[in-house]
Length: 152
Image (tube, rainbow, N blue to C red; front, side, top):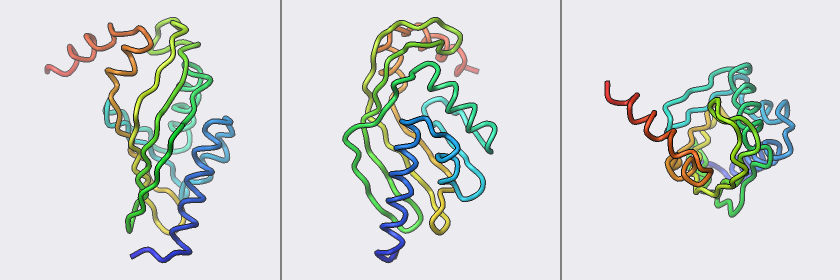
């Protein structure tokens, strides 16, 4: 069982993590990890492991969606993780998977599982409906290319 001090510290770390993602202070975001950042994007199967890959993920997603932000965050604390439910919002104003911007916005529900060692995040695992996101921004053609890739 996580004691109240550790619970509050972990919640503060996640709030800093999420706030600095929005303000694009990515060095501060990376510092919320316990020495080695890792993201797992479950909808796409992508894994970003280490400072360079995670920074690349931040820069790529914020190029495509420079106004990306979170709303309605709800936090659930477990022994080795904090689960955060939130709405992710943004507007496609930059290149996305090699395609030009559509100028269209999205809002998708997300579940992010932040795994911890002590007070530091060791992994962020993200679950969301990627079909909803690409449809909302007018890039449904990405669904057919993904379907073709999964058949083999």
